[in-house]
Amino acid sequence: MDEILINGGTPLNGEVTVSGAKNAALPVIAATLLVGDRFEFHNVPALKDILSIQDLLADMGADVEFHDNTFSIDTANLSHFEAPYEHVRKMRASILVLGPLLARMKRARVSLPGGCAIGARPIDQHLNGLARLGADIVLEHGYVEASAEKLTGAEIYFDLPTVTGTENLMMAAVLAEGQTVLRNVAREPEILALAEILNQMGADIAGAGSSVITINGVKALKPVTAAIIPDRIETGTFMVAAALTGGEIQIHKAAHSHLKELILKLEKTGAEIDCANQTIRVKGNAPVNSVDVKTMPYPGFPTDMQAQFMVLMAVAKGFSVISENVFENRFIHVSELRRLGADITISGSHAMVRGVPELSGAPVMATDLRASACLVLAGMVAKGTTRISRIYHLDRGYDALEKKFSRLGADIKRIPAQT
Ligand code: UD1
Figure 1 (cartoon, rainbow, N blue to C red):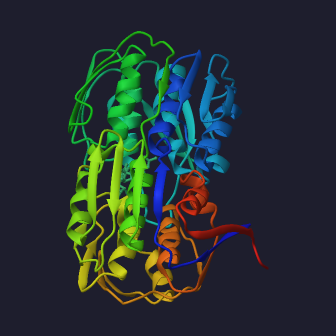
Figure 2: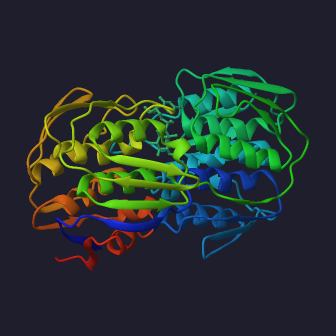
């Protein structure tokens, strides 16, 4: 398995282009199951999770091609309607096939995802919602077996905003009979992007991007060609990299309106940020000021940026508190950051970060997707050499991150694992 080797200490400068958003591409690809026809999506990032959903849909009988960021899929001849454990354990977002399969095929069998490194991550909200639409849900042998002769619109109140839960319910309800009102839903830009593509397909969805979504069921949908929105988390990772290394990066194809909370926080740390059209320019300034953050569902500070922001605070002047309010166990990167010399103490859902003058390179291990990005950032600012193992986590969600950082001047390379 490959590793990443970084010699830290170089300010990053130059221009970089953001890839399409993984979390927008996955639900849109799952939505093709609603129609038996050919779709084409552009700006799809070349990363592991996309290959995982490609394999999953191909196993169901879909005809899939993925080249040069164009994803073509024909879902006319599906032979079975199952997401087996082997797929779901690699990628939890496989659960996104449940809603569309149920809507079109009247049945679906999807492995229960189980917990993961960052938390228990139940799917009760997905299942309760589908049951409210009339689905019969049985949990057996580690699988969700869902069936419904007919889905009927209903009013559904989510106990908490869930991103993939909202997406699953939206996809199930588009072909249901009558009106569905989803309340207390997640408001992430990826949900609005999915609703827009479903509407292009002929669905009748209003309110996506707010906390109430109304869906009037339609009889059938049609295929479309569409482009995937920019990845706001990759964008944010480059923004933090500029602030952290004291460099200046122009980030192209970036949607600054999706990053308002991060921009406010980064400005408080002392970074200069200009947004124009689809470009964000970030210039890092010393010293970095300490700033508290609390992760929240969108439009709050994204949990997917918490680990990266923590690296910045680890070398800031002063003391900050980072509170994780979305996932219960999302501080596993802290022990790795401590190995690089960070001074961080955890108390429940709060991390107390006392900035240190510098981090020092060391071998570290990636533990989840965003934790891996945080270690890459830490390695780029640490003195000496950092070797990151288990980078398959990074490859799940970032399209050639080390190449992009290398072009910005980082001394970073991928090497075969040393045994
Ligand atoms: C999505 C994103 C992930 C991001 C997360 C939060 C995708 C593919 N993944 O994950 O990158 O970190 O949103 O922004 O888009 N919960 C329940 N019951 C449920 C569903 C969720 O209790 O049925 C809880 C979860 O355990 C968690 C919180 O709700 O504490 C939010 O999770 P959710 O929004 O569902 O995350 P995902 O959709 O899995």
